[in-house]
Image 1: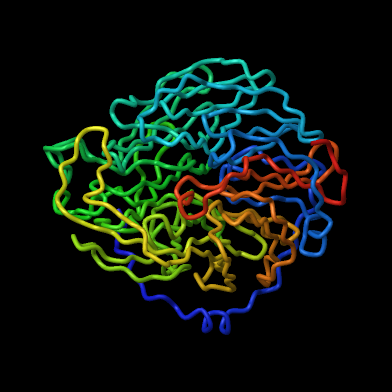
Image 2 (image 1 turned 60 degrees about the vertical axis):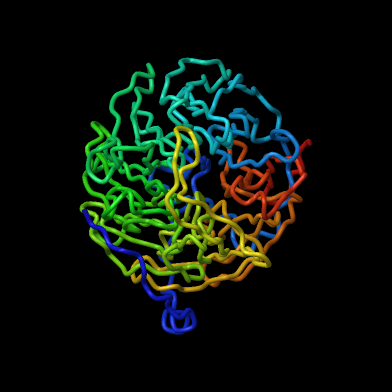
Amino acid sequence: MTGRRAWFPLLTLGLMLGGCALRPPAARPAAPAVADWPYAGNDASGERFSPVTALSPSTAASLTPAFRVPLGAVGTTQEGYPVESGGTLYVTATGDLAYAVDAATGSVLWMYDPAPLHPPAWAPEDSKGVGLGADRLYLLTADDRLIALERATGHVAFTASVADPAQAYFESMAPLVAGQRVIVGSAGGDEGARGFVAAYDAGTGAQLWRLFTVPPRGQGWMAKDGFHGGGVVWTTPTFDPASGHIFFGTGNPSPDYFGETRPGPDPYTDSVVAADVAGGQIAWAAQEVAHDLWDYDAASPPVLFRMGDRLAVGAAGKNGYWYEWDAADGQPLTTPVAFVKEDHRPPTPAGTVEWPGPDGGANYGPTSYDPALHLAFVAGINGPETVYSGAQTHHKNTVDLGTGEGGVPGASWTGTLTAIDVRTGAVVWQIKTPTPPIGGSCVTAGGLVLFGQEGGELEGVDAGSGQVVWTEQLGAPIGTAPIVYRGANGQVEVAVVTGGAESLKGVFPSKAAGALVVFRLGGGQGPG
């Protein structure tokens, strides 16, 4: 296993900007007539790259509102990432509601409500989306169910139990469909749940394998007494069919901020892990932060991309660094680079101010990648928090922080969008945003990067230069990333969910109702 601490000095952005010029972009293939977005990351690699060339920095101003579909109750946060296939949008809302929406008209074709839900009392119900199969879609619920729905009707095909809410588990990620397997991950590590990733048969819902990321109580670094754990899998894995490997990030060990009860590096936590999709065996693991004391999960989904003749995997951490490894063996390919302010020390009982705080860096929002420019676009959260550490009695189904975190009076929470050349690890450009772009980004073959902010701005940026070329205020926080697709009707559309992030609602409160908002290139105002 490759593992090392991520304490690298913050590189001087000006030097990197001055010393790294973009090479001429490679020729782009002709855009297909239909360009769906069927995965959370558009394809199994997680690149969040749309082959649509028509949407570019020069045409972004032609985007006009098409329709808006209300999601959930007023004031609820919304973290659902939409997907689109065959002219239908599929999106989730708080409460694990699932919607099928006509992408041309905005009409709701069906809605599924898994109520009643019985998650742990403290668990959020912010679903991050669905996994699409050929005829079904797959939904995880806050009370640990995997539900298969018929795509055409929304009728339940099967329900499978993933975990026990009484053991502090809950689910929120969008499942990954990898052939005939549905890959799911656990949440609840901050409450002491023992992290895992598991595979289920896409046809029957039978569990095929389960891989735990931390040892059982009393083994390895896990204390014999108490209800500790961690290493959960917050977000959707990526998949390489050629090697048969899935790649997923893991969360921090618990107790979060008090490390004396969990000596050593706490392996497989705060890591990117490669595992065999057929049987769940670990191929390699690369640790971003050893013996984490800051709640610096590897929460942003890994992204796969070609680097010469090899496949690489990149990931942005909550500790505010971008990493790259060889997908075959986990060996580092570049030196990690910071994309937000870095100023941290070990937490103390009196409290220490950390940059980024536990809700900063790169949270669950995905990175996007442009294969012609060789650029990864990392959305960063710049904000401090005070972290306190000390011995704490932890009871089952209670938060296992040891001892807690708090705000920093007068501090502002801003953001960054950073373009990193994956061949060198150098920052090509960086823009600062007034509020965090926690939801991540997407990029088109036309060279336009799209992302949203907690302040409600949906923005388009020139992928080559970092110049902001288009902004639309949506009137509600944006806690997810847009998708871009060209449907069967030939129209290019941008879809995004508003409602904001659960972790930042205290900093950016909103009474606006969340919605699925769709823009259309070149006009075509729709209903609603």
